[in-house]
Length: 166
Image 1 (cartoon, one colour):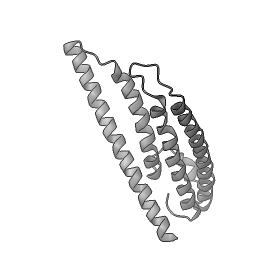
Image 2 (cartoon, one colour):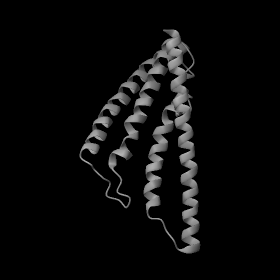
Image 3 (spheres, helix red, strand yellow):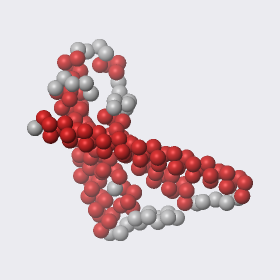
Image 4 (cartoon, helix red, strand yellow):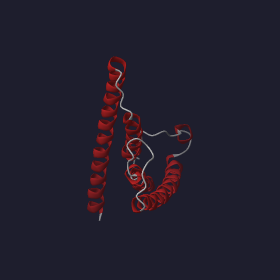
């Protein structure tokens, strides 16, 4: 059982590494696209009206692709001031409780998000914008990202309960 959990943890870490790398690539591509847009608008008076919409969608994707990776590496915002003044045992208990609460919240958002995405797909809802994409392609990243975050919070909870470093 321990070997299976280690294999799952390695797979999960690898998946998060890949998704974070994709988020980084998206950031670079959007930055390049915006720079090209600025130059083409200033030099040639040519504008790409779809670029703003694409940038907005890309920012949403980057956030949810990298969120579980950030949490898994403790690079998120946290209040260390409290944890510096309490014992390790109490801190671990707080981490267990907070991580479980956060995981439950993430799984609730995941479930509601899946229901929303399915509804958008079934009803062929589109965005009222220039590109007019199907909305489910945009919102599908939300339940996916929250699922990964929920799993990461569960993992943190187990690690804190076992006294392992988060």
